[in-house]
View 1: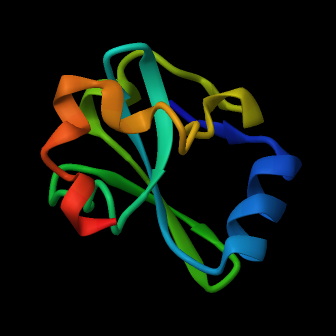
View 2: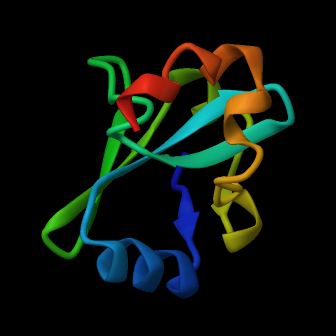
Length: 90
């Protein structure tokens, strides 16, 4: 299945200058920098310029499009128990 990445998401990733990962969080799929949630071997990598957007194997089964509303909220991302332990990395 082909995943569509909105142009706004591509521009955002290029502007940020770091790889991102679409990961599963308590509130659903979230685009998170790989410094918070590193890519896994099972992820699918989509090139975005010189960068990569990784999509978790779990999310690959359910999504067809990646949109800006999936970008993590830096004020709330660590409230999710799945990511709370990673706060020290960011």
